[in-house]
Length: 214
Length: 214
Image (cartoon, rainbow over all chains, first blue to last red):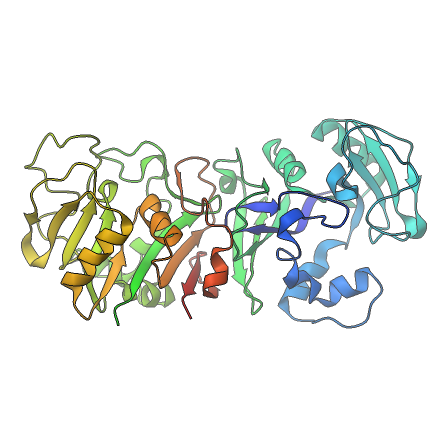
C-alpha cells in the first residue's frame, strides 16, 4: 500500500520552514542557506546534482531515504519558482534545472494551472488547482504501488498534515531563530498523538524528528 | 563573575513554553504535564520535593545543574501564582509550598508589588515592578559571587534574551505541538549568533539545547 511521506523538511526553533521575501535569487528568502547547511554537506545532496563529494554519516543516511520508493511528488508553487499570480513566462521551467532531481511526475499546486512541462530525466511538472485530497488522488494514480512524497513548502506540508494525509514526516530541527517567514506547525495542536515519534541529534547539530503513523 | 542562567525551560515544537488557560489547578494551562514529563522522571525533580526515586540518566544530569552556584532567581508573576491584577489574598504564598525548592531570594516581577514573604528553607519572595535590567541589578546584589537564574515563564525569559542579559540558556525541546499558549522565541531573530550552541537528544525523546555565551 502506498504511503505518503515528507523528507528532509528543515524548520527553525521558531518553526519557520522558509524565511521572508522569496525571490529568484533567494528561494528561502532571508533564511538564505541557514536551514539547509546540514543537507548541503551530505553525499545525498551532492548526488542529487551530479556532484562528487559530501559526507556519508548519519545526516546522509537519513537524508538519503528521500527518494527510495517514491513514484510522484506534490509540491507547492513556491517550490517550483518565485512567481505569484498568472504565469508571465512559460519558458522558465522552474528552479530545478533541465534535469530536476525528482525523476518522477511532480504535481505543482497552484491557482494558476498551465500546460505540463516534461523535463529531462523523467521529471514532468503537472500544474493543479486542487485540494490536498484531489492532488493526492492524482499522484497516487501515477505512483502505482510506489509512495507519494509531499515536497513542501511549509503551507503544503501543513495542509496535508491538517487533512491527516501524511504517513511519515521527517522534520529537521535547525537550532536557529529565523524570526519571520512561513511556519510549519500552525493549527496542528496535538499532531504528535497520531504518530510514533523519534528524535535524534547528529554531530552537525540538527535534530532529526520522525513522526510515523503506527 | 556572576553569570545569568536559564535551566530546564521546556518548549513545544511550535515554541510554546506554557499552554493557554493558566489556573490554580493547571499552572501550565491546557499543556498539563506534557512539557515536563521528562523532568518528572528525574532524580533532580524528586529531590526538589523531598521524594525518593527518579532516574539518574542524562536527563537528570542536565536537569541537576539548575541550582548549583545560584544565589538568586528572577521569575514572572505567573510562576508564583495564577492571580492577575491587584493581589486579593496575601495569605496565599505561591505554588511552591511552605518550603520552596529555591532556597535563595526570589524576585517576582509584577506590576503589583506587595510585601516580601519569607518562607522556610531560605527562600524569600520579593515583589518587584522593574525592567529586566533593574531586576537583574537587584538580584546580582544579593547573589554576591554566585549566579542568577532566570526562572521563567516564557515572557520573562524572552525579555531577558531580548535585552541580551542571558549568558547560558538551557531549553528542552519536547516533540509535541501545543497549538496555543505563550511563545518563547518571538522577536529573537538571529539569537543563535550570540551563543555557542549544542544539542543532544536523550532516550526520553526530548532534545536538550544549550546556548552559551562564548
